[in-house]
Image (cartoon, rainbow, N blue to C red; front, side, top):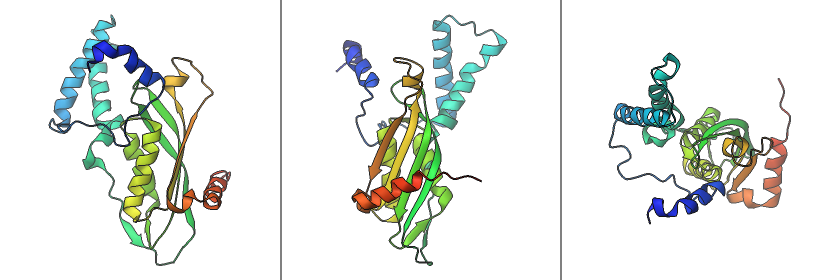
Length: 225
C-alpha cells in the first residue's frame, strides 16, 4: 500500500490519534548508522525543508538551525529510541517489609506526538506493590523519561512504562496514569488550548476497584513544601 495513494487515510489516522502497536515501530536496521551519521543526514533534510518553505538560510539566525534540530532529534527528544540509553533499574530486597502501595506522582513527561512531531507535555503517576523487591525512586522517573523520548502516542507510553516496571520488579501489581497536553490538538487543528488527555494502565491488584481507588486518592493529595 503506497502512502502517496492513501494520503487521506494516513491524515485521518493522525488526526484521530490512532496507534498501531504497544511497541515503538522500529526498522530492523534502526541502529545501523551512528549518531553522527544520522545527524549529518537529518541536517540536510531539515535544511531542505526550510529552503522549500522559502527561508533564507544565509541569515545568521537561521544558518545553524538545521544542525541544531538534527542534534536535538538524535541526542535529546528522540534519544529514547536508542536501547543503549535504557536506564539500568536495579532492584533491592525489600528488607523493611513494606507491603503497602508505593506511589511516585507528578513525574514530568516531555514527549513528541508521532503523528505531527509536536510536543506532548504532562505528568505521570506511577504505583506498585512490592512482592519482595523495590526499585530506586529516581529510576521510575528515568523509565518514564526514556520511553517518552521518542515519537509516541500517549496510550503506548503508558503501557510501556507499566510493562517495564512489571519486568523490573517481577510483579504484575503496577499502575500508571498520564495526564498530558498535546500540541497537535492545542496549537493546530481544533486548537483547543484547554483540553488534556488522560490514559491509564492497571496491572494485577490495581485492576481491583479498591486498590485502584486508593491509588487515585493518593495522586489527588496536594503536596506542598
